[in-house]
Amino acid sequence: MAKETKKNQPRQIGKTPLQEKKPLIDPKLKSRIETAVFLLVLLFFFILNNTRKEPERGPYPPFYGKSGQVSNQ
Image 1 (cartoon, rainbow, N blue to C red):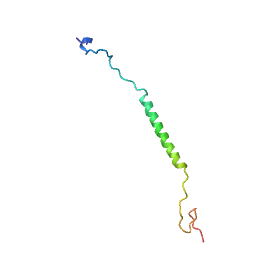
Image 2: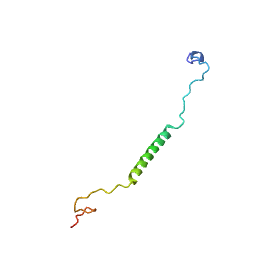
Image 3: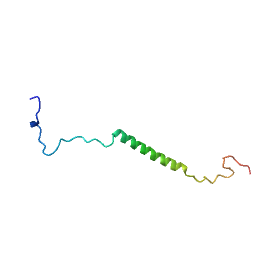
């Protein structure tokens, strides 16, 4: 009686035993792809933000040139 026979197991009519479904993509590969996409989006926004020219800040305080040195007038 150490061995269990098929008679002791519940009968399944018209169905095969459930098998574990394998994922379409390996979880490690999926994680790496998601990380790469995230970094590419981050890089895209960094480049987009830093390529636009910002207007020159101003107005400067009186008697100061653009280099920050006091101009004599």
